[in-house]
Image (cartoon, rainbow, N blue to C red; front, top):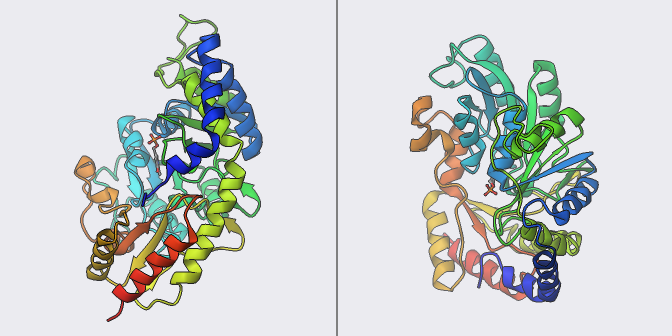
Length: 388
Ligand SMILES: *Cc1c(COP(=O)(O)O)cnc(C)c1O
């Protein structure tokens, strides 16, 4: 059994993808060809955002968004310590400082009240209530990166007004949540800029690296188009700012267009798979199934369970593995405890909710083509493994 079954999807659309790639081979515009612009138009319309800027990866999308927002040395960027490394790495790469706030134990996303406390304590230069990075005396609040972990939009009902009150730029790390919704609004539309990833294993995945930035702001869109192409100005060798080679390959855009045709249906299949898991797992003692919210639609990039303790988590994973069922842990080490961020000066115990979840969480196979019988089998193994 596969953790994510990309083959089942490929079987459905293989001939379409081959045709789409062949069309690129025929016209030969491998970089920023017509498929890239078509993909930008289609996905902007889908996310109900005015501008989409395709780029080379989700990491580049974050980097480009931060650069377009003028984030740099002396800037504090508030975000979740429970995310993929790229969320905070891009902040550090620009010389800015990630400032973490703890997560909510049910959604695994930023806890807006802790976020508010982190902002206030940084303004007060007071690390006694909320852990702050070592350079708290010299940095000023500039931005928030909300992370839509596992495909569930972050708590924008509270984060967006907070960013507004505090005068902070809100960037949405929607790398896992393209296709998700909250109160009818699509993921990628919550911040000044939404950033997504089309890494093959994400809900909408390419056959290589790819990403996209979304914004309603014309000026930001123009800046991001320039940054993704070496800070280009009016012509090819006119460079008005520093940028990078963050362009999207045309072949990846062609693959994504073919996959996008069945994406809505796949998002629906993910809802059904998640609901089935929940029905099968809801009443097992020692195991917490993820909550399904009425006003939010997750795209279930991951289906994650929280075990009573680390020993039970590890035992259940071993039981499943013995039965040929792969599981994964996202994320075993919170960002504030990663060696790469050592210079921030955070310590174990700084974000207790995140640290406890990291020890107890694990993810089951999740993709649109999951079979009910396999889910029932997994539930049976988990039920018997969870017996005291
Ligand atoms: C995957 C991911 C990224 C990075 O995307 P890439 O396309 O792999 O560069 C950033 N943030 C989060 C939360 C992710 O899951």
